[in-house]
Length: 311
Image 1: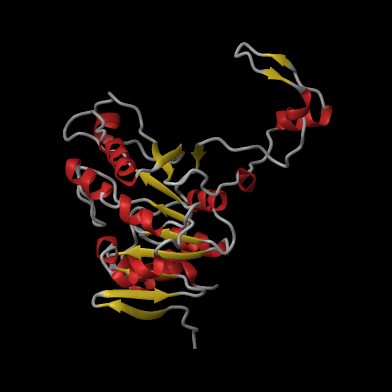
Image 2: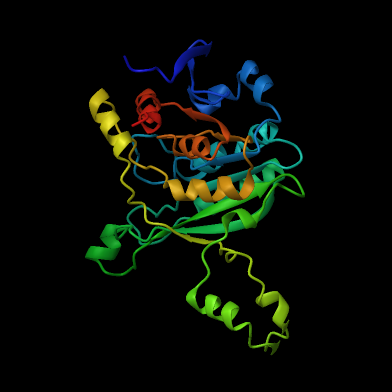
């Protein structure tokens, strides 16, 4: 007999919480409804070290997972600024948000809705913009297809912005946890113990010591190049077996892993208010963080359990 790893609990009418372990689990509810629930707010106020999420994008074409457009999207998204801030742990919590781009209807022009929504969110919650990141999807298909493939008047749009914000002056962060492998050139410099020192045209004066210390890896840039092609076989098989709809826009595990490692420590709490297939929760669990996720679509909620099934 297979061991059950989730136990369903009811927070209130029409809000179900599927518990995993160590306080982690997923709410089958809209985030709007949860943020009006006093039990939820009292329990999780000042709790989360990191809110990491990718809300529905402001696309012109309606998606199954639900999305708004234009001014409606800006208001809808920015209204979360203050309530989500109340859930962040003081004084070190952060929120990281990926917002995709949209195009004007029947025109080869980008909208600025994603940027306007972020700026309004920042203003309403009085957040600091810690840093902007770019996720370059190296395997993304040419889009928008009509203007790129047919009319040939635009090039492939292959990146989205990821924004790191915090209402606090010193949010928790440590780039030593996300070091990347040294390049062959850097390895050679460390071996030779000699660097091209001196003053640069920028007037920076480069010395030997700072560049020849072996830090066991290089500090990554804010451009994250990951293909969204990973085969999530456990999740796919589980959804097929249970006849559940698979989420059409799944977050790459490496993106979630980067920010969870960078901005949290083991035992910290991570929250995703738009969890989809719950990549955030799955990665947080593997990194020994506690997590809470929210997904309003019941099929997506139930399908996400497949990520946690042990082989």
